[in-house]
Length: 427
Image (tube, rainbow, N blue to C red):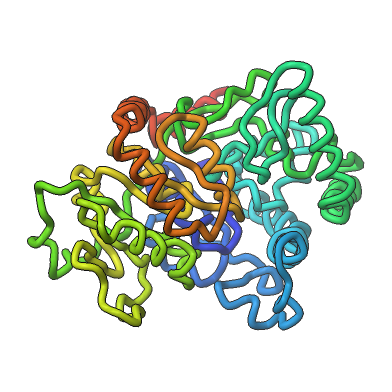
């Protein structure tokens, strides 16, 4: 029986959405192998998929920076380059070797990789008759540059016309030659050594080399891509919130049904410093006629030096599926999955994020009309309050979020992915 190989970097935000993919494919009768970090082994096996470990040298967890004291003190672009190099670029060649070995050992005919699993990039450049079908799992906003689109990561909306094309060409050259020249050279050099072909464009655009781009969103939340070289399949978000596995907070019955509920969260990854978003949001909303529900994403709730305002309730986890139908606004730092939980229920957003893929998520929140995107990791209480009042006071944001909720409800989901995979296996 042919099989599908799912490839993920060993990071929580990358693995979690792909576990939902693995579970859905297995439930549909597919044979699935998933390669990622060892700490996810049991969670992979719980989906019914077979687990395959990454080499120890390129496996890491949330404490990886502790073994790299030279990371301390780096900020901004220097920190970003360091993280990209040590977590992703240096892993590319061992990842590629692992993937090719698994393809041979398991009779893999479809590879589904996420964008930062860079070991799949050389695979994409091999002749089609020498490799399986390669699909890109869109667990982040679509990372493609184009005539109307700036390079991924800048958080800039599309800009067409002559001026926009000049802007985008200039920014692409800047990223390639000034911002990330070593990363461009390293990945292109690896591709040349393995396949005889260098990367044909910006390293951020390698997903365009895949046979299919499977995006876990809907068209209303993604920029138009008329020049995409690979077909884009919008299947919508998959899975459910892991927070729904936890009991209801003690204060659940205290929620006021007459007041709007504002959900505030920093997700489950970038949540070590509440001063980034949670604390300024609590301050901003303390005197508003709303109930504020804070989800700390697993962090303790005893971290506040003073008592929380009377209109605030906090818990490590809250059951999103039970809470979301009652939420008037979600304030978050822009995780792709969390934003889509809100959109699934037609909840408008205020998103503050400037790192990882969060700047791109925030930009799409603004562009799509479902909320306000703020290009910062440290918004002030004043700015957050203004953004929250703006969204709560304008029905247009909720209406637009409702349109995207309808698109998500109509999306093909895992069935669409199964059909796509099956089509690739049709003689």
